[in-house]
Image 1: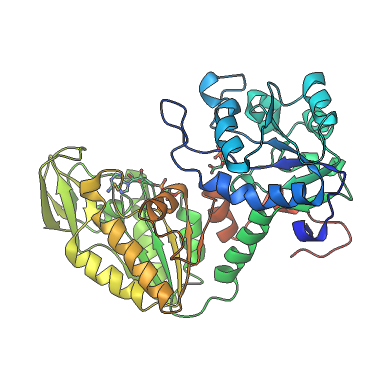
Image 2: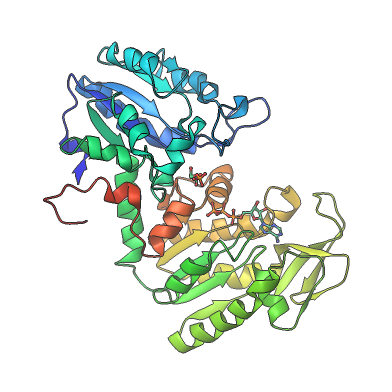
Length: 402
Ligand SMILES: Nc1ncnc2c1ncn2[C@@H]1O[C@H](COP(=O)(O)OP(=O)(O)OP(=O)(O)O)[C@@H](O)[C@H]1O
Ligand SMILES: O=C(O)[C@H](O)COP(=O)(O)O
C-alpha cells in the first residue's frame, strides 16, 4: 500500500475520497467537524507538494437523487475557513462541468464536488460511474476510513482506474495503525466498553471481542435487554426482544472464555424520555412500569470506573446513557474521565463510534485519550476481523496485505 508520505504530488491533480459525512443542524451548520479536521493533513500534504485537490464525499443517506439538506455546498464555507483558501464547487460529481473544473485546477487549488450519493450508482458500486469519477484526477487518494466498509464506486471501484497511483491517506493510515494496536498487540488487562442504543448493531463485534479482551463492560440502552433476559423488569427501557437469548448465550460464552462481564448494578430511571423528567436511581432489573432507564447509576459508575482505571488497553464504543440530555450524561462523562485517567497512567485508549467520539470531544477530552476514531461502522467491522473494501482496493498487486 502506498502511504501519503511516499507519494510526490507535484504537478498532479489528486482525486481524494474523504468522509465528510458530518452532522449538520437545521441551519446547515456543522455540529461536529472532527472528520473535516482529520482530513486536513492529507489535503495539506498534496497542496504543499505542489498538487491540486478534487474532494469527493457523501453526506447523509439521500435516496439516490439531489436533496438540498444533503448538499455538500453547506461545507464550502467551513472548508474555506479551514484552509484559508477559496474553494471551487462543482454542482455534480460527474459530467463535463466537473471534469472541466478539475482540468483547470492550478497547483495549490481545491475543488469540492457535489454529494456522490446524489447518484444511486455510487452505492451500487457501478463501474461506469466509477470510471466517470476517475476522470477527475490523475492520482486517487482514499482518506475516508469511516466509509471504508462500503464497496461503493468512490471508495473501492474507482481505485481500479489508478493501478499505480492509488494512495492511502493519513486518516486511513492512522485509523488502521490504531485499530491494529488493539487488534493485534494489546497490553493487558484489555477492557472493551460497549454502550449505545442497540445490541443488534454490535453483536458480531461483541462476539469477536470475547476472544480478545479480559473485561467487557456493557452499559447504555443495550444493557436493558440483558437485564430483561436475566429475569428483571425494565419498564419502558430500550428492549430488543429477539436478542434476549443472545445475551444469555454471550454471558455463558464469556464465562467459558474467562472474560469478566460487567453489567450495570443500578440505573437512573426517568418517567419520560425528556431531560427534565422525574428521576430515581434503582437496582438494575427493578424498573417499575411507566419508567425507563436512561443512564447508569452511581454504584455502576464506581465499578465500571475502577475496571477502566486499572486497564492497560481500552476500546470504547457507544455512550453509557442518553448523553444528549445533560441530566443523563453523568455515566458517559464519568467513564470518559476514567478512560482519561487510565490513559494518563499509560493505558492505550481507542474511542470509536460517532456518539462516543462526540461525547469525548464535547467534554474536551479528545486529546486526553490515545485515539478518537472517525469511524463508526467501519471501525466495528474492522474489529470484527472483516476486510474493508476501501482498504483492499488500495493494496498494490505486488505487495502483501498489511
Ligand atoms: N438508556 C438508553 N436509552 C435510550 N437510548 C440510549 C440509552 N443509552 C444510550 N442511548 C442512545 O444511544 C445512542 C448511541 O448509540 P450508537 O450505538 O449509535 O453509539 P455510537 O457511539 O454512535 O456508535 P456507532 O457510531 O458505532 O453507531 C445515543 O443517541 C444515545 O442517546
Ligand atoms: O458515518 C458513517 O459511518 C460513514 O460516513 C458511512 O455512512 P453510511 O453508514 O451512510 O454508509
